[in-house]
Length: 144
Image (cartoon, rainbow, N blue to C red; front, side, top):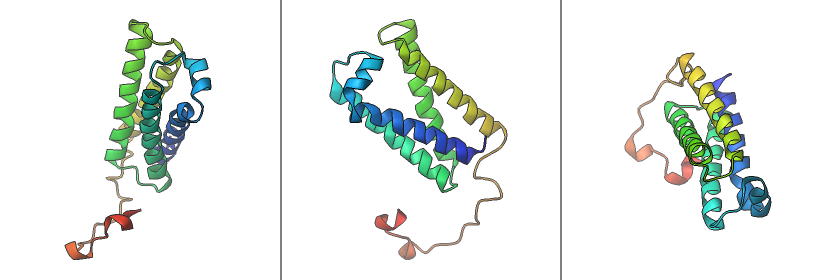
């Protein structure tokens, strides 16, 4: 799979799953089990959605840099590890999280495949860098 399409697909998945508990905590709990701290679930969802939006935007702009790939794989590995430990080994959270862990592992495999194929923006498709005078650099508002 092309790294840009992978970033978009992964990003959309993260945005949807991240926003779900924010949009409708009751249905999220119906599937994943009751939560003691709704605010914490929503905070985690917001962070996951933020990562997803970043991945999708990078993919759409065809700017999937090594930093974007690291963001994708680090967060995905972290989520999979937590789910495997707490839904699998410790049985502290609902087994439904093992399904999400399987998706996260599939995403990790896709990113690993993209890396193996040498699909990073350090390739020839990257535009040459031009010297930019410090005074001519865009302000923070100009980067979006």
